[in-house]
Length: 133
Ligand SMILES: [Zn+2]
Ligand SMILES: [Zn+2]
Image (cartoon, rainbow, N blue to C red):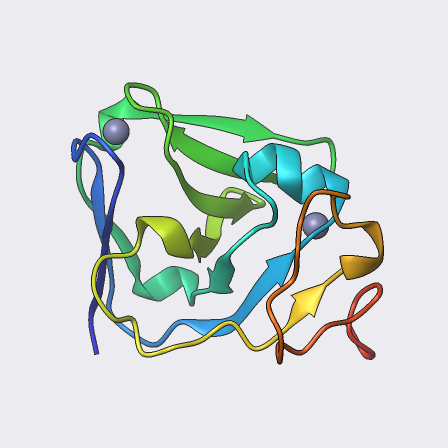
């Protein structure tokens, strides 16, 4: 399947010519800041299957000391993808269009979630990371 995504203003669009993997929502304090939200909503991609379609010149990035970071639209501020060592590592699910045929199957670091967040019933949660990660 092909997945399409775009930022809020529509200047930047991308495609993933394969399946998204390992959709997760992380509730740690760092992800709350990075995603400006109660948690992240993120899925991994195969870097070779990811391609920018339009607006690559509007991208800006914040890269941390460990080589991991995020890329944003410099016009509207949408966070589009995560990068690691210069390659796209995953996409933010909020910028994916339509049905990417994947569901968030784990809510991680709920032990440090914001006091104001109420978790939905029935979701799979881990106080920290899931075992084996
Ligand atoms: Zn934009
Ligand atoms: Zn996190």
